[in-house]
Amino acid sequence: MLTPDLLNALRGYTAGMKNSVKLVLQTGEHPKREELVDFLTQFASASDQLSFEERDTANRLRSPLSFMLEVDGEPNGIVFSGIPGGHEFSSLVLAVLHSSGTPLKLDAGITSMISKLNAELNFEVFVSLSCHNCPDVVQALNQFATLNPNISSEMIDGGLYPELIEQRNIQGVPSVYLNGEPFANGKIDTAQLLNKLMALHPVDAQDRQAPALPLQDVTVIGGGPAGVSAAIYAARKGLAVTLVADRMGGQVKDTLGIENLISVAKTTGPELTGALQAHLNEYEVTIKEHLRVESIEKGDIKTVQLSSGERIQTRTLIIATGAKWRELGVPGEKENIGNGVAYCPHCDGPFFKGKDVAVIGGGNSGIEAALDLAGIVKSVTVFEFLPDLKADKVLVDQAEKRENITILKNVATKQILAENGKVTAIEYQARDTQEITTKNLSGVFVQIGLLPNSGFLKDVVDLTPYGEVIINERGQTSEPGIFACGDVTTVPYKQIVIAMGEGSKASLSAFEHLLKNAPTKDSLAA
Image 1: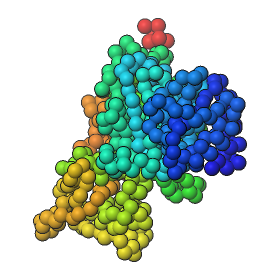
Image 2: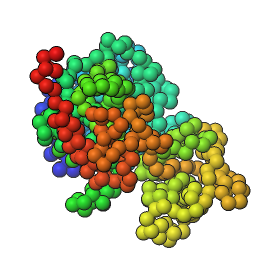
Image 3: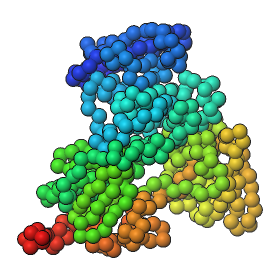
Image 4: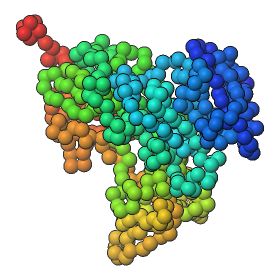
């Protein structure tokens, strides 16, 4: 299963392993078992520090397709139920490397929080090997298990456990269970996992402290194109810079095809995110990833309170927090996320093969989603609130040529109906006649735009009624020393290339502010 090129790459990854890791496979019979044995045998051949063994684990593992990682003869809580190929291959590689002593790339505050958890936490993550969001969740929980012996994490390939999928009514991935109960559904990042976990099992404040940073010149909040651009421009000025982000890449990371970033003919969100991270790593920027900002104290010196308990003092702030998927806000939406309501057609589309689905939204993202789904599902009905579609003509033309795509305009979604934990229909109203119609279907994909990530800025800077940060042509907000850029602001046309330019502009404005407000000898003496 592993190509020579992949094996050579794996030998390179495992060359620096410090501790021996054994892959232990549960004994038994299964039609896919021979394939998994071959996979694990080849994988273990990549390093003398790796070994493979088949053993009866006395019901520790789920099935003959389950294997666990052992370090120094002891299980470390990481389990894979299935063949971790596709996107999950990297999850296995990282699990092995971290188990063998490779340092985790987690902030010290996060490491402290996870290490201090005392409760028994057994996570199950149901995935699809074609899902590009699933590895983020699997890898995050595997790191938690590596840090704390009270935590275990099991990746489960849903395609190999149909009875379990049916039993738990799972219709979307990733689907996370904690101690047998639903914990999280759909696209979720490490910061969100931490927030949910801390809400259930709080860690005392004194255990959530990280080493304090010295006074920063610039603190950037946000790790997307705007935030990275701002941080790089500030670092190039020789300033002390910290970047805080719940995840690097932001919304860009979820974009599969990018063809309008000038000078780059074609790329993907994950590729661009990697390039942004690599460029940022060329400079002396302190990166605080997987953390959120809980509050900001204004003044000549601003104080930023992080979810890890750390407080950053900074002379200037640049807000670059971007936006998130906008929700419909109708009955049946939140209740059925992961059970027929989804926001990522690329991840959850395969679960609706041969079924009827809806796409809410007639902009570019909505029509692109309809085209993507049309090759998988039985039919797609697009619901657009306005009398006309907002998508580019070239996309609309393609959609109108598809026999299994129907477009309904000037209609309002009223509610999403479900029975026995699964979506069964959508109720909508014609805006001209007020007639209400119920359409039977199995899935609803919401694609109605973005909402600014500005909730933490209330009473800090002026916002529009829509939540956008109000800025002038220099990226200045209503508060001296606080600047903003990208999709979170009032700047029109939410595009990657625009966000990058706005980030650099905000950083230059912050630098100018620092020059004009440099501390004097008298103020330093005081």
